[in-house]
Image 1 (tube, rainbow, N blue to C red):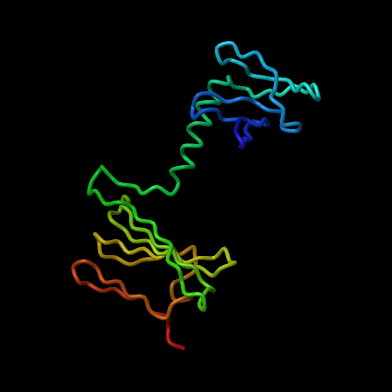
Image 2: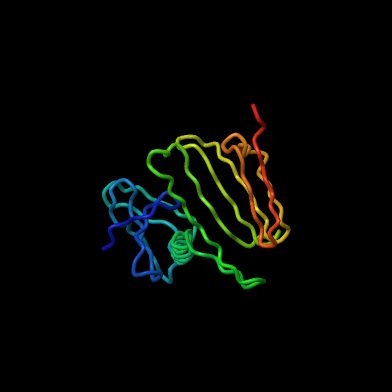
Length: 177
């Protein structure tokens, strides 16, 4: 018996023995539903406690496959990505901790391969606010830019300087007041 049930299509599902099968449960009573599952084709089940019929509009075999893929994708959300299409540069995701006395902001940095080439992305925001700054340093084109829809870098930093592999430097500086 699993300690977890997954809600999908209005029914709770027990995921049994990774990728083998799922079992439908009543979302109210958490009781296994009665269903005819010949060849994995059941599309509805009934709760013995409330006699309510639950319809999930897909064979249990298809739901098993979907839940297996979905749960596997959840496990890979934080996985490092290594490109085999070009330069084999792993995507690095690092959450940088700011010392406790300066804990009004959070910082996250990523290095990845995109259509534009190797890119460093720096995210910075105030804790408790949905507004953030996104700064992009394109390592191949040696360009520094930011997402104009978000906060501007100079709203958070006085000066940001990027030094690229060739030694070229680019700076974004807040206007002097």
